[in-house]
Each structure stands twice: as C-alpha cells, then as structure tokens.
Image (cartoon, rainbow, N blue to C red; front, side):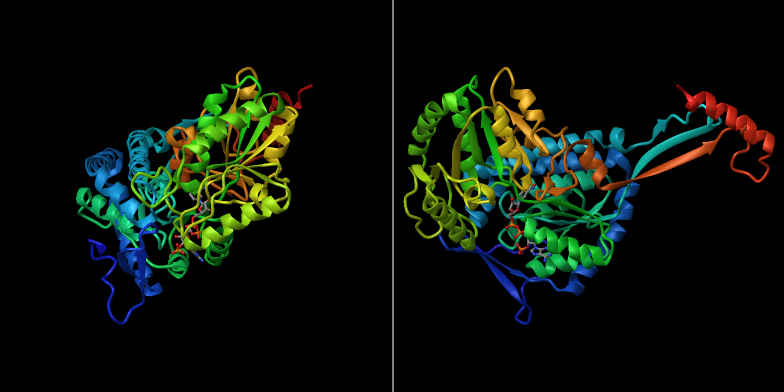
Length: 503
Ligand code: NDP
C-alpha cells in the first residue's frame, strides 16, 4: 500500500482538522493516497499566487516558454512509466494503455510550444480602400489565469489538452483534477515545477465538486472544464455569477459508420478498440455502430470473433481494466438490461458484472430510444445496427443530442459521409485519430459542449484578440471628425456607390 502526497506544498498535507478524501485502486481496493479537500479560501490564495506567476510567464516570451515546455516534455518522456503506473493505480486502466495515453501528450507539447508565436503573435490585417491611410495589426494576448477542471478517465491526456495550450499561450494554470486522480495531477504539477522553478505557473488544488466550484468563483480568467454534460451545466451556472468564460468538453455518444465498400476487418478492429479500450470510459469512445445492411452479417461475425478474445479484469493480463467509478457500474448494467428488455440481443460477451469488472458486451436489435443508444453508457458496450444506406446512417448518427466525434469506414463515399456528420471531429478509416493530431481542433457541439482545445483554435481559446489600428497619414476624408463637411459626405457617397452600389 502506497500513500502518495502532493510533493509540492501548494496542497498542504491532510491535517486532522480538515476534510480529506481517499483514492483507492478500482481493481484491488488498495488505498493509493489521501488528499485534502481544499477550501474556498485556499483556492483563492492559489489563484492569487497564479496571477503574479502569470505576469512573469507572459513576460518571458514565446522562445523561453517553448524551452520550458520542451524541458517539461523531456521530463514526462523520461519518466513515462512512473506516470503510467500512477494512472493505473488511481483509475485502473492497464499499464500499457496508460503508457499510450501519456505518450500521446508529447506531440501536443511539442506542437503548442513551437507554433504559439506564429498563431498568436502580431499579424498584419488589410484595412480596405477607404481606410488606406490606416495600418491594422492583431495579436493574441494571454487571458491570465486559467482554471482547468479535469476528469479521471484520461487523467493526463484530457487536462493536458487545456493545460499545454493555455501555458503555451502565456497563461498560468490552476488545475483541479478529478477526485479519482489527484496524484496524477500532483505528478504533472511537480514535474512542471522542476523545469519552471521560479514561479508557481502551474498549480494544483485538490478536493471534490465544491473545490471545482470554488475555482470557478475565484476570479480566474477562464475555466476549461472537461467532464459530464450534467456537471458542465452546474459549472456554467457558477461561472455565470462572475461572467467567467468557459470551455466545456463534455460527454459523447460517438457512432462508427461502416459502408459496404469498407475494409471490414479494419472496421471491426477500430470499433472494438474505439469502444472497449479504457473499459469504454472514453468521451470519444465508439458506442454505436451503423453498418450497411449488405455487409452487416460479415461485420457482426468479425466483431464477435474479436469480442471472444477480450476479457476484462483487475489482473495485469486483462486487456480491459475495471470500471473506475463504482456508481457507473450500475448505469452500464442498467443500459444493457433495458436494451434486452426492449428486444435487444446480446451478440457477444455479456457475462455478469463482478464488483467493478464489467465484461465487454456487443448488443444488436436495440431500439434507438433505449438508453444504450441515446445516453452515454461510458462502459465496455457496443450497439450494432444495420442500415439501408449511408443516408440512414447519417440521420441516425446525427439524431443524438451528443455531437462529439465519429468514425466512418469506407472507400468511395467515406469523406462525403464524414462531412455530413454533425460533430466536432470525424476519423475516416480509423478511430480517435483526430485526438492525436495536434494541428486539428478538438471539441463538441450540442450536449457535447463548446469551445476548442488543440491546434490553432486551442491556442486562441486561452487568449484574447487585441487589435491595434494606427493612422499612418491624415485621411483625405476626415470621417471621424467634426471637421467633416457636406462636401466630404458627397465624396463619400460617390465612393460608396462605386464600391457597394453595384449591380
Ligand atoms: P464529472 O462531470 O463528474 O467531473 C468532472 C470534473 O468536474 C471533476 O474534476 C469533478 O470533481 C468536477 N466537478 C464536479 N462537480 C463540480 C462543480 N459543481 N463545479 C466544478 N467542478 C465540479 O466527470 P467525470 O470526472 O466523471 O468524467 C467523465 C465525463 O467526462 C464523461 O461524461 C466523459 O464523456 C467526459 N469527458 C469528456 C471529454 C471531452 O474532451 N469532451 C474527455 C474526457 C471525458 P470531482 O471528481 O472531484 O467530483
């Protein structure tokens, strides 16, 4: 049994007179750590420290920030197994999946540090004919202090999607990790402090929802929230009290569409990995499959074959780990039970749940209004449905209230189908590919949230645009002056008629 404490002093050790919470390994039940529930006053003090650090961090400029972010990347890369081990201990995913999760962050760190100056730095804009005497520039300034509230399912990759881009943009960050994964948050903060020892540019606050709410109220300049849609609504209401802007990365119910000319083996592989990896606890995890009726039987056969090889367990040999949150187990079981009661059939898996270990399950013939199709299951289940054609596949995909990601497998029409899907991102002939490409924005529509992390959009999300328009010489027409005469207006009228009067 190991007890991990925040190695930095920002989160003071749990004292006798302050509330604490425990983190237990979901597979073994072992105590992994005990952490303080930080109070509103402590969160405010942390944000006040961050504000001073933000000034220094903004001041040192892009080149120095890039150097520090590269050094941070180096620390993570060299200690990747240590961090992966901690992820496994706290939230239960197999070590190799945790290793992959951490590895995928490194490209984002490299990209954001390198491209921040070009994306955010000063840029000349045209002023138009009438304003030819003006020179216009736009640049993006850091907002200041960003509060990042993260989930537990990808406790490194997901919050880092905000943290990295916020830091590269010149902001300080106060990070409130999920109460299931505070140790991972503390590890990241401590590793960053090794390469940025001067000021607390990245800090940690630990606790439950009340600590997250305190962070929203603490005067941060933006909140980057990742979590469920239900919590996002509460976070948004809290942020509204202080007009604090918000990025909301919420839940999903992603569909995978398979056309009749698709490589079916690849589609089956993608569906099973995209749906079952991380025990299905992935916001952009595949939860629904819509397959062209001509190839539905063959795809079902390939899926069943792959399901038969999969086993969930808490032991190191299991490809699928336990469910992290005890309360989620009941929801997953309920979705499967409701689907069966409504006429759904179990094509593969479906063995009874034991403790927090839920076996992968493939369902079919499930009505579209069942929770297993309409709600986020967040477990190792997939629902398969044959469709008449790609029109029906797109209609059913878009009928959800969630619009986060999607995948399309096919040849001739795959990209056309992808463009018709209402979602932030689509992978074609692969799954989740959009999350690992640092240049493309990541985020949802509808109940999946708003705002973007990753890419140029992710850098700009944590900055405000700042325009400077300079008069280089006196305007021939004094438009913004009381010196404007009837003659000037007549000239302006002629120019307007020429420029805009048109056909
Ligand atoms: P939750 O919504 O339960 O929690 C998310 C974070 O919000 C946690 O740190 C939580 O703290 C905190 N929180 C809870 N209540 C409040 C509050 N009132 N004010 C401020 N903060 C609060 O989500 P989960 O952690 O269970 O994560 C799973 C969800 O996240 C799924 O719906 C998944 O789809 C979504 N997700 C979305 C992603 C995306 O990019 N779109 C990526 C990854 C996950 P605490 O844990 O201490 O209660």
